[in-house]
Image (cartoon, rainbow over all chains, first blue to last red; front, side):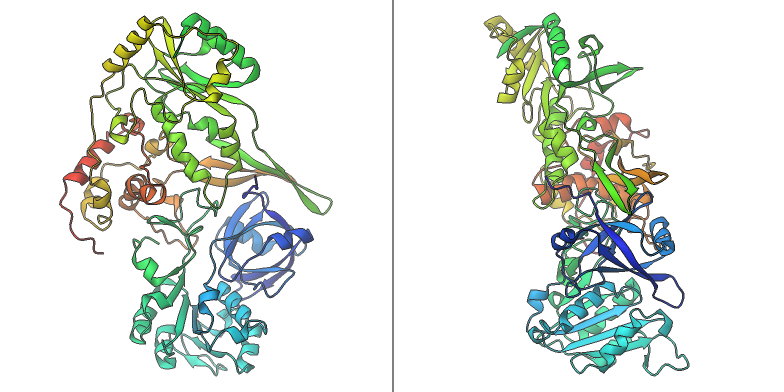
Length: 279
Length: 341
């Protein structure tokens, strides 16, 4: 019987300070055993439980894409015991990873469709995975137009700045970054994500919207998407809830009869409309 | 049906202890609990039910999942799976049924919990029928009964100085091999029948239509009142045979340690508290609703069965007499409004 509680050993090869406020670090991990990497077959949108042995484990969305072999990436905010320890760990430390867990963005259904990816704050991790996956030369042809709207309070809080700069130059992605208030030296847009979404006005025709961000951003972006003609079935969301087991047994992450860990974390808005508003 | 006298039964337990870990009801202070016994004399089968259900034999309050040790630049993990052969003797039919419900949780289509399932596969269940159900028992409302056999390998029926033994599975039959018990004679069978007839339950819970009510009751104001006297102590969940929520924590000493899981409960605010400070179930109202909805709606949606066996422990152990039978009756008696946020 395969033991779903046993983590695979991984080495922390990079502990990178991602944001100006230093509260988000991006961790790059490499498998200690080559065969483990073959076992760990994941798709954008899935998450994993990262163990700091002796301290505990916590679930994080996988920020790397399966098109980037050899390592996994997690961007983690410093909030609790496990994440604070993670932030202080020296490179070279051996950690554990359990996964991949949960479902993935419906990349098969996305094929042939235009995609509108909307992210806010540091909830951009699995969206980075999705965008990187789609932009890969093997996949880019399978998908239509790719529009990315990404907002943060200020430029220093945007994740993956180097990649954003590269995406900026590419003709096959329409990247719109925005910050809440004007800052000297910022040439991009200024304004909240809902407003900017309205301005960019992506068409709902033959399209899916993927949205991930703080609740308040989602709350005000939903009416905009509705106005643009996105039906609940065309809006894809990713939920977060406190988790322990990640496999539908420990009983805490449920929303109604669905477990975020096992049935999610990816749900369509139509699916969420059927569930109680308890997340 | 076979027959065994009580003296012989104790001898049999002493034989089984040589081969199996035998768990049975043992008196402790003024209550009973399932303990691993070293001698048949320790067992008291003249009891109503245990304080904590025997689920803790298969799913302990606290157990090691694995141990880790940092060495040679890597980490060594050692699984801690309990493969010992066990017997639970004297468990009540309601508790036997609870294992069938837990099986669904720990053996899902996608994930299998090796800790629970290994113990489960290695454990034989010898049930004891309930000659005198308690005033808090309502198993018959949930499809069970004082002498229900579902989930058991053997069922004992106490007829005074002897037990009538109902053999229900091959595993049960094997356990008895070497005992050469006589078949129950007509007199014993008649005595067993009388005992069963005399075991009447005093309460019934009307569950008809409950599910369709719960389907549309999430936002109903009924929850504002129904939870009010609940203290959130979680005695109900800790003593529930179908509750299975757990927490996972690490314990470390130097460069080694272990990962442990402990029972946890949906009645605690920390159970769902996010790192951000947000809590999807911030007050007693949401937590109490979760407990009722999980057992009587969500579990039904997911496993086509109610996650309650009517053992009555949550009623007996509640410090403020919050009675699940009354809660269900109140829901049943309420007028269902359309469920709008």
